[in-house]
Amino acid sequence: MNEVHVKINDKKGSFFIEIEGKQEAEMTFVFAGEDKIIIDHTGVNPGNEGKGLGKQMVAQAVTYARENNIKIIPLCPFAKKVFDKTPEFRDVL
Image 1 (tube, rainbow, N blue to C red):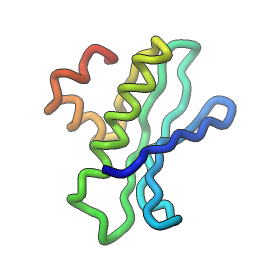
Image 2: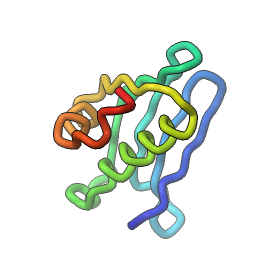
Image 3: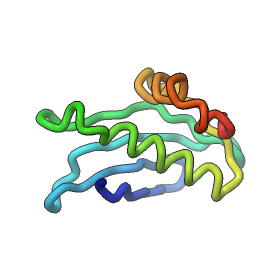
Image 4: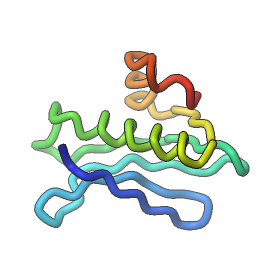
């Protein structure tokens, strides 16, 4: 499993995965007030599809939300699909 990093820059941020020093996947979000984030895009570099990188980033977003007592609004179709298929993540919706 790859380590998922988080980068926050004022009112927006991203979860990302680096493989061999190169960013291979990123999921971006924006803050909506003090207690919500909106996941707006998930992207995985060519050649990394189907490796579960997107789901790993969603799982890290869920952990982040739980630790910071915030909710997630998954506007990104990929993230929404992961939430739909993973009932144990729905407590942060």
